[in-house]
Length: 471
Image 1 (tube, rainbow, N blue to C red):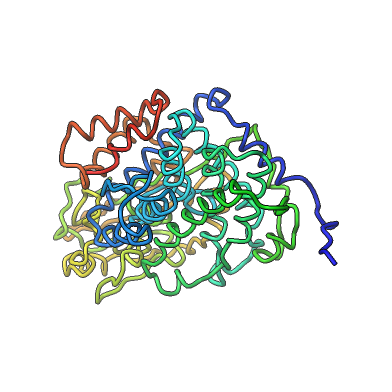
Image 2 (cartoon, helix red, strand yellow; image 1 turned 90 degrees about the horizontal axis):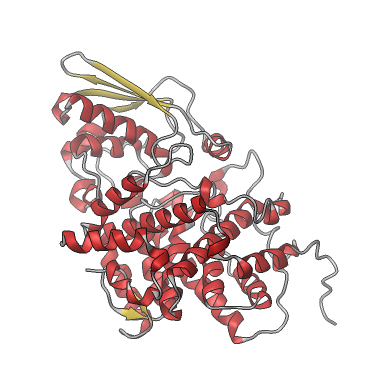
């Protein structure tokens, strides 16, 4: 006897499928197009900067190995080889997240899925720049709504497991489905395939601080491509997964909020509420880093000048000092003491902050031990995310005391890149120039890439411009 589907509660899957199919570049507000273009540039820059990290070579090699060698329709960034869409999305998704330099939504890192998948699918399908931008916007809008619908309830202990890369697959399957020209029904089925490919929320990343975390984004990118491809190949039924609480919602949260699936759909663009990181570090380390950089530069501080650095209030789970050094990039990216010591010792941000030598550099570790939490009540992560959703950010104060008796202090809440203090186009371009320089040694090539990305809507075939994404 067949299983009854009478418990389906709405038509959210259908609405999101129709929205994804019908979203057109020409109907997007100018500010949404501009933000999508800058986020695209920002994510690509983060991936290109990863070239200097040893892990990048392994991620690229795995893409080729899974492909059975070189050959395919989509480009491996940094390297330039061609592999299949799915394998390019895997490797490039890992590169996007590797330095923790890409954007951050309320619920994770959508660009580490949206951007590598959109480029792989657009290149393989010979889509235009306008079609790429429309797919990017669709990816953000579906991702944010699905993610918010399955967030854990208020008061949830994040260390029980927060499924950041669980709902990430919807950031991947959405642009793939759009760029591969799936019908509304096939997009609906691709969302169903995404639902059954979601992973169980796990705390293992936080418990181990392993760089395996960055591979999770590659896994979801590859799965998103495959979900769209399977749906396009033709399957029976498998419809309306988001409307069936037993198909998706209840294995992720005890209190789903399905109203989020279609909240202000077509009216509010949640891509506009995404934070773009100014620094290669965890999002809750951004503001202290920005303040410390300002104090260092304004006052010409050197490492030997520092007596003490105080962050007030401190941030839950981000104050670890490891006197023996840091054993992974992730471990360092989540440490305020390491990040502030890094910017004091080397104000020029880049992958060199996370070299094996720097993770155990006695000079950096010496300064990190001087970074303390203030007397204020620590900002809890749930509280901080609540402020972010409400449009603000935790207010932080950094006070540096120097060996000659100076006391230097500055406060900030919404750092550059926060939706309330977004970087300008020129600031995005300058960050791209810096980050791309770790892959490209030609100023002319970097400037060409900047021009292409700022004018991506003029590109007729994305396959003709992928040379800007490798050496």
